[in-house]
Amino acid sequence: MKKYRGIFFDWDGTAVISRKAPAEEAAAAMKGLLAQGVNLVIVSGTTYENIAGGKLETYFTEGELDHLYLGLGRGAYNYRFEKGKPVVFADRIPDREGILRIHDAAYGVHRELLAAHGLETDIVFCRPNYCKIDLMAGSDRGDQLFMQESEIDSLKAILNAHGIKGGLGELLEIARKAGQNCGIEIKATCDAKYLEAGISDKSDNADTILDELEKRFQIKGEECCFWGDEFVGLEEGIYGSDSFMITEKTKNGDFYDVSSVNGRRPENVQQIGGGVERFLNFLKEQRGQ
Ligand SMILES: [Mg+2]
Image (cartoon, rainbow, N blue to C red; front, side, top):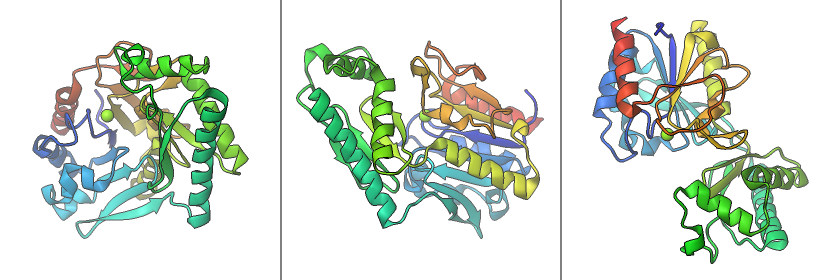
């Protein structure tokens, strides 16, 4: 593989096996590259506290941290390090009025699903710029009919049983319309149990941080690569959360999927499999180049 100047990667399932797994191995693999001035960018839906127990900065020197970035909260926050401490340098956090519009849109989704389809949901409101809508909150939970092989199949069965024949696509369309009714553009994603509806996603993280790398180091999209374990399609034309790193701005980069799951991926994604070990080996290979 060529030597990259910017390496964007997902955290859970790509750099560590799970959120709770120790971060030592990932940090060790990252360290050498950061010392060389290669820019590493963690793009994850979670919060800073959930990455390496909120202590990521303790693994690196100030000089190394100069080349480490994080794009977190599905587009909400972008971090760099100043004097060894994490600092949000760009965010997509709306004011109170903006937050309330997102809440209104989420309620709109709840209302439409219940009124038109008899599908009950619960909403988690306390998120920085989105709501989580629990699609399996109602009486369907535990019903044998919906105990499918995968969560996504369970969700499709639930949607189908409630007359939402267009599956996830129709669900995302309901969210977009609910946003329009509230005067906002809703970016919605679905990971089976939850529909997340807000104003940003991983694409905002990828674009904002690539912009920053361009400004600081004149790095272009084609000098970067993007790694994840969730590119695979959930349904025709709807891909996993890591696929949101593919944008107009980043599309000339190289995209790698460490997941071995069968299924369709966006056309510019190379499935190489091998999980966390494969990704950490890649980091070590890059250091040697
Ligand atoms: Mg992942």
